[in-house]
Image (cartoon, rainbow, N blue to C red; front, side):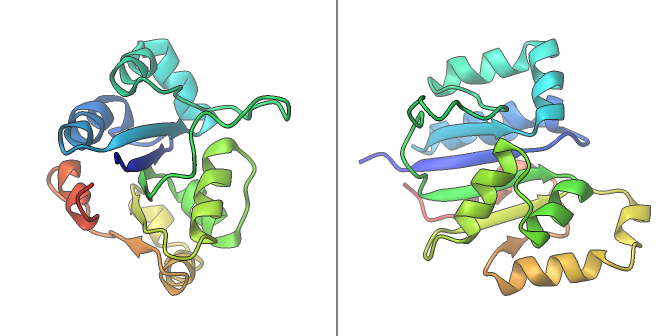
Length: 167
């Protein structure tokens, strides 16, 4: 049985150039079914560049960045694992506070609230955001909820896939 990896990404450095080659393609090669959800801002970036369509062709699943209508079925069952990479300072703060004001944060918050579901977050934030007095608290809340926060970016985002058991 193929396991599903939810890949959630927000609009920050590297998302437009690194997401497909360093996460989507390697995850598929490892045997994952990859379900991709972008924040609304990143969805606009990826649609404008054509990258969203390229990722959708690879995954054979809808790439989401907007909410579905209540009458529309969920496009796939609850994923087995969640990777939020890259996660902007805004997304990390909202996630720590349980704010689910877009599809990406709704999915991530549900994952954190689902016992036994591994969640990994890779913050991609500028030094001024990390210097904000609330930053350390946001990371502590996420870690306290069982989220693996990778606060030192790996050389290749592909390394993040090693944090999950193989499908």
